[in-house]
Length: 234
Figure 1 (cartoon, rainbow, N blue to C red):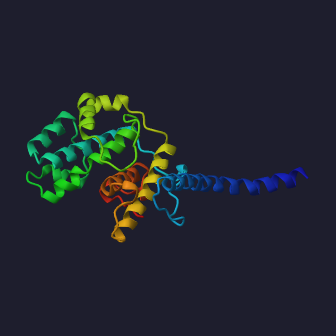
Figure 2: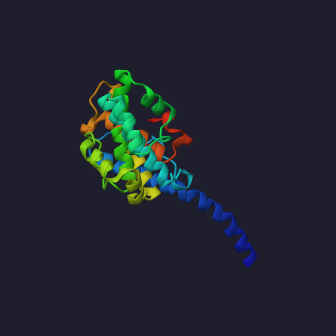
Figure 3: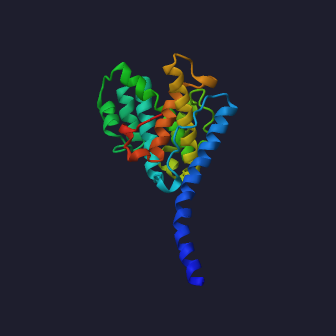
């Protein structure tokens, strides 16, 4: 009888091990939907779950710090159009090697296009996400307004790359996944509204939602994509 019981138990355990991540992902989805519904933001039940914790990428703190500095640097150049200032920031933050190919091309260009400048200026929102992920910023807040750029600038100026690394405490993976799942569903709502020719629901800022979705997908390793190739599927 003992042997039979052990055999049955052995068969059951793998099933339980597989179901736990699925339960985790479904619970995360349910919490996100409940929050959006409480805000009057449309949702759809068939939008998939995101990867559970054991299938997501856990970024190294140094990689997140470097991404923070790179995003801040390209955003400043995008905002100001000042090529010399951009080069100064690279030296100030010892940021050589922090940039992706597209970012490096932008930083090397003494006279980037207006569209490129606009696109990279939006990366301030990614900086905000990274500072939150590193535990420097306490809350992401609702994505209905742009981030506090002067506050971000002051924080990075005071800390520098080394200080940021010393202060950084990368949040638990579950928190990063919660934020990624929630923004995924916010983004669906804003895209759905755009396709209908409507304003984003609940006062959401479409640009902020998109940039957060982009940054959070990188943080959780969505589809193992590099920064320049991140997808924000909805």
